Every structure is written in C-alpha cells, then in structure tokens.
Image (cartoon, rainbow, N blue to C red; front, top):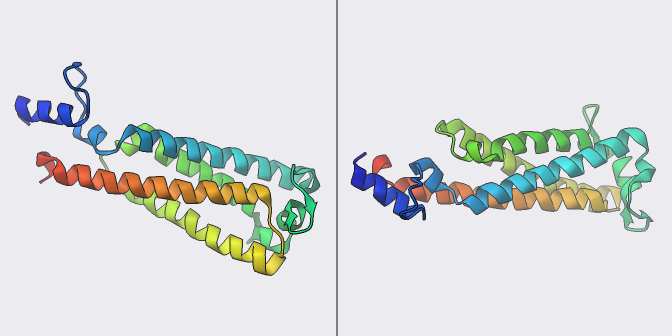
Amino acid sequence: MSAEGGMRSARRSGSGGTGAVATSAEARVPLWVQLTSLVLALTAVGIGSYLTVAHYADPAALACPDTGIVNCTLVTTSSWSVVAGVPLAVIGLAWGVVMTALTVPWAWRASVPWVHRVRLVLSGAGAAMVLYLVYVELFRIGAICLWCTAMHVTAVALFGVVLAGTALGAAGRSADPAHA
C-alpha cells in the first residue's frame, strides 16, 4: 500500500492528522459495534451466571415473582429447562462466554474470516433459540421468567449488533482498494 493509500485509510477511519493510522481491519467495524457487542456478551455472561447459580442452589431464590404469568421458578424448574441433561442456564452461560471471546475488539479485527462467520452464526443461533424458548414459555409452560426474558433481549440485541457490524465490515472491505 502506498503512503497516499495509507493516509486515505487513516482519514476514512477518522484519525485525521493525529498520527494514529488505523489498519484497514480496524477501519471496517466502528468502535460502537465492538464495544456494544462486548457489553451485551458480558451481560449474557452475568445473566447466565446468575441463572446457573440459582439453578444449582435454589431456583425459588430468583429475584422474580413466582405467581401468575410471571413465574421464574416454574420456568426454570420445568422439564423444558434441561436439554440432554444440561440446564439451559448452563448452555446460556457457555454461549455468553463464547460470544464474549468473539466480540472482544481484537476478534473484530481478526484477519481470519472464520472468526467473523462463527460470531455471526452463533449470535444468530442465540436469537433463533430465543424464538423457540419464548414459544415454550408462553405456550408450553404458561409462564414467563423475567431473568430469561432479560437473556432473550440481550441475545436478540447482540445478534442485531453483530449483524450490523458484519454488514459494516463487509461495506468497509468493499470500499477498501486493497480488497478490491
């Protein structure tokens, strides 16, 4: 890449004349995507940890009503809360940990394409799982868990941010003469 091309890349990334020259990978995905996705993934880890501890310690201790349509205890102790002997809380926690690893800023700047594909597929799988779990809560169990809903909102939001970051990254690559 010529010095002129490097300056164009630096100007596009917003570093201007500050001396900080962004690489083309850094310029592809905005910082807000990197930080928002990381915060959402860490939120998933926090919620998943809380639900996992509650599952193994005392599901009735969840800070959530346990009567009527909002009933965390009913949801988290139902037969639907375990898949192949593994509690959904543990699966959600594991998903959050993997998504955290895939949303740290250096993962967004990874030069190997499989990292970006895995991040998109796993975040999409999380959002798809939300559709299934909401169906189970509403139509099979007949109750909603507020903590589960917080995890659902987090998963769908994370998928949205990852999708936006992937689209912006693709647009950045197509606009970068080095990738043309």
